[in-house]
Length: 106
Image (cartoon, rainbow, N blue to C red; front, side, top):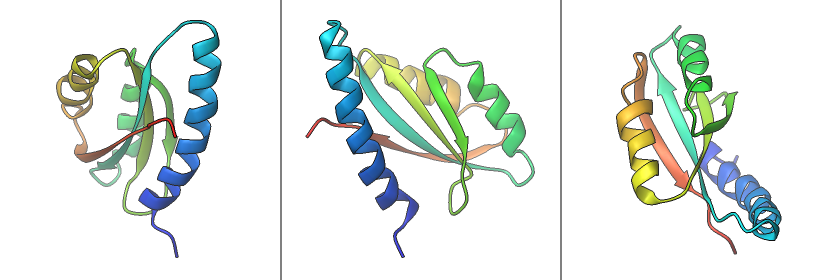
């Protein structure tokens, strides 16, 4: 059985390659990360709704397994990514921990 992390790395990497090629056509250079989020039990919906209000978050999904949510963030540089992760996402009430998978082009 594959772990959520392994599945995410395989699925997101393919989609990211296509997405970056599409964005490159228009001269936009951005990076993408997928954030796996563990929440306090029964707080998944609250965290989910809060994530939808963050500018850098472009997608949020509920997931089963070790992590409760998966959020996609797009950012221009590492400073913006750190600001989003540390300053915003990790400080949301109900978030226990996060794991970040930075998508790379292959």
